[in-house]
Image (cartoon, rainbow, N blue to C red; front, side, top):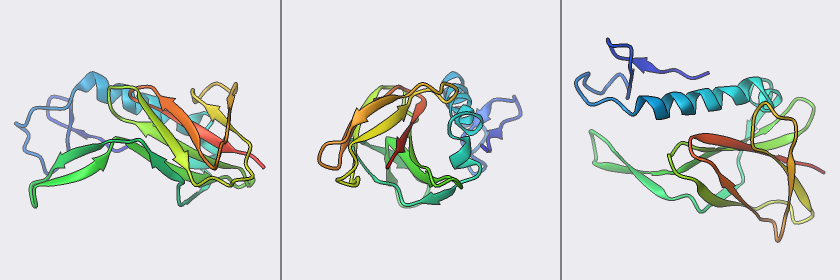
Length: 156
């Protein structure tokens, strides 16, 4: 579940610690991202993010650093792709990758079991059609649309 901070005008604000007069984030982009991510909780990601157990994710390569300006100690490096890996109660395993930027991104997931031959990719949360991608040398190469997420399910 997302928590968002609303300003008096009903617009989404950065956080509670940011002064109200600070310019608000782009409302269209942030509502699109929230809508897209929330759909995973109700769709294909439900067995994982609602009922599953989070485990250490496989490594993402190819994300760029986006500096976050902090009030204290200047800047913090923040990856342009966020990820989490989950085990469902039925023993299925999936990793969700989120692109919160407004640009398409190419990336790799590394450190996979070398015996893994293929993975299933869900590009839409409400579509049970998946595509399969070959695993080569414990890695897969993928791309992700702006303001969206994909789910990679690892089989036996």
